[in-house]
Image (cartoon, rainbow, N blue to C red):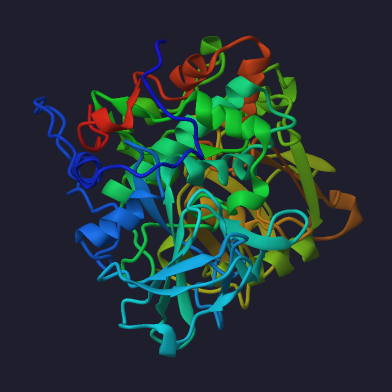
Length: 541
């Protein structure tokens, strides 16, 4: 497809104030589409926090931090990243080889300038107002280092392109926000989300587009915010992992440059571009993966987030029999190079009981329902050494008499059986039943099920696309044959919605280009320049 004009990421040059204002208006208050069949789900949010002044002096400083027509983002920087980032910093000290300029973010006045390599430590005394300080390198193309933070494989001094907004945190310490151009941000995201040296260029390019679209959609149309609204993105894995300059690599930089400014849209509107490591041969529908239990049966996903198989003849895997056969056959698929294309774990009954007693208490109350059994539950399944889950597992039997409600796993009882009550189109379990001598626990939600069935090593189950087999005592071995061992076999890593990263690489190895990869994982979408999008799609056909 023809490319639109763009600058390579990392290039920075001052631009007129009028040009900056036009860019922010276009991106922060995107044009409304004349198509009325698709409504904008939410009002557009401003790109940058209100804390920053709107005068020409502030705009002049900000214009140094990004290339023409490139949006600026505000990214909350945590102490260590990860799944549960901590945003309060006890102290923050900044440094840059050419020296620093420290600016009042309200007035745009430079309040401190340092010599080359001289550090600047944030303090209440150095701040002219509660708006904090904006710290920039004296040569704007140079990154700003933070002495207290470490990022990258060599545990090096954290460095970020753009500027650093430092604000007093309400409970003491400091909040840190990286004000950075979108393309520079992606240079610190793509290599963390997809290894550049083992994935092919077309896969990296697809990842760059997906990460760019996700970021802009989250900033302008998302519902989450951080640091009291100072940022709509953060550097943890619950958003998109971002470690700045230290993780930049030539191959991922090239992927960002090759796709610069391109985003995915449906009927002209930005879409939420979800992705995970390994779909397992069949992607999952968003409304099934994340819908509530009472919506799951009739959930309708937008076309671009509707689960599909790598091969049309496979069909869907919401049938227990069909999914089990798929696991056993293990046919070639786009993501079969993933180490998680097939996996297996096992527990003794006692080990799994201990795990369930712990993990049940950690799940949201809304995801767990307990039904007590008035009479001792029978031992399910045939009394054989290895009994697979019954083929009719998707049909819910009559419930035992008793009360319903939520209950923790403190007194789990003896584990008798595990049954997948409902599966998504990819085979991922959406509703799971744990049967014990005390009653049964019904657990809903793909992620909750993965948390519930923590592996013997203590990590989440790679995905809920799994089947269960059981070893039981033979009838002659004991008067009351019981469960001895549980084996779980599955495919995939992650929720499976949207793009499979290993699948993208598999397609690249078969000669597909990044537009073709994106068309497979987000069917019906179109690549356009970010400035041309017409709002956000709300996922209705």
